[in-house]
Length: 436
Ligand code: GUN
Ligand code: ZN
Image (cartoon, rainbow, N blue to C red):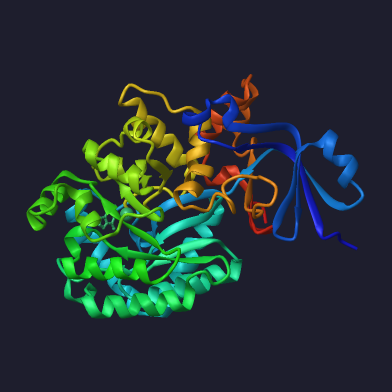
């Protein structure tokens, strides 16, 4: 007979606070020979094996993990599932990349069967990479969001998605209207928002593709329903920023366009935020809004270097985003690796514990889900990953030389990718196993 309590004996590390607030040492817990105990979908204990085994060895089915490390499932705070098929498209910066690659690809998502096929590929890729929660763009078509949420339900994933609102400056086959975007978004909210582990995000693409009237409607939706997210792009590319100034001459700056339409809130997530002025950081902080830092995308599209120190200075919430398909990897480990390089280019350091925080608890905080996901605290949902120290010959060889947890984590984050994810669990169930 199997027990309803499951436990994993392994090295365990998880983030408990932002190193910027409490210092590195108080920002994480590490159990060299740890035990993670799960009952149904929740974590009921985490700690040293020698303390927990006497309590649980007769009550739990225990799996011993060899040469592995357990941590929380990764949280990707900005990604586009319809762009899975155009990841790695050559040669353009943002505005041409949108016109030449993105818009044609997104045009296919009126077909729900096609959307479901892509959603299945996309979710499989997220889980192969250890990502258990993401804030996801659909397309302008409501079918794209139905297909996505239906696919999420089959794995019981905590996911956030929304239909793109876009009523100008895009091809005819990809624009909605002020009225249809409001009605379609509302119908999707009523159908999906807070159904099980799913949440809805009101998703105007970015300021240039919405009229002021449409942005006003987006703000009204946020007033009408509780706990909705607002998900959009902000200040990614210089030409984009100039375009926004010319389209909204009455706004003080880019963020002010969203502010004037009442789109800043504790559940607002702005992707990129590269070219921001101090006043924009202040407003992000004052409203509890968050930025998704998307390093692989920012480098690939030549957008610029995100200034993490500015965000920290102004106490703005930050999560990490892959931004696939502008970003080049689904792997949050690879995303961390590129984040490190973006920070290096500014003469600073990104510690592996800050990276762990950004990829897990920081992302959960940006999404206001830190009481449910983001670490392995007792009472939270059992979304976690098992990382394999022996994923590749090089990793085995390199980690053999490692003397500290810092070094081990940093090497995992620098060399790691999908091969490093041995297993992914969502709500206590295995949703990806690399070797089976
Ligand atoms: N700005 C507006 N749309 C997009 C998009 O699809 N990707 C990125 N990276 N930036 C955007
Ligand atoms: Zn994006």
